[in-house]
Length: 336
Image (tube, rainbow, N blue to C red; front, side, top):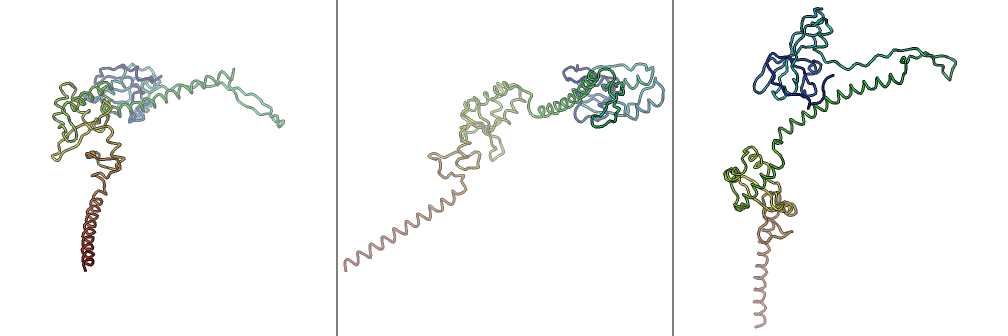
């Protein structure tokens, strides 16, 4: 039976030329289909990062069985390249090629043994149909039929569990790859501690939108407390737009005119304020005296409002001039 749990595999120091048992549950999704049917593989090449294994093809095994020479082995005419860490999980036990006495031993050594479903001894039973006078002959398992059915069902369940375990293992391997590509190299405690360090530095430097701090200066200060530069660089890339550990501030980052990255803190409520004001600029800050409902500087209608104000002022001046002239005309009439 092929092992299906990944945790049972023991990491080996695989060597070139060695033959190893394959743990199929740890094979990645991109594995050639035939490799899942092979039980033994040889390490043909090895480097610091990858391992190449060789194994016989289906044609090679069939050709070996057709030769009717028990002592011969099939040619290792297929190969598969994998990472060193993956190889240590897949190749879990070193084996030695024995001296084969017959062809069945060759087949059992190189190929995976599938669980067999026992054959039932059938016996004929005559059943008389209630609707007619004819008699039908049916075949049932010898002995107790219920026991035979239960035994077959157990074997089928075992086969299904093996297949499901390999599928789950492949999905888990794919998920591990995605997590590794992301950033799951550090604990949540390390992340939170690093955020608090950066928050304290920004508060100490009074870094706000009008007085941001350059990335190089922030990184230099944070490196005094965060020794892991990989974690520090990821934090500087990940925190912009996120709520700070104090719950009232938000990390922000942008490029200045010279292309240099700057960091600062802003109120955590500014995102909602920008949405309610209809401002698309993610760095817009309400001017002093601004109230909800007032037109902001980033609003598309701000220019039109300014033009309307100028026209209204001009109309007022014209009205005042007309009123003045009308008063002069009325005064002249009264004198006459």
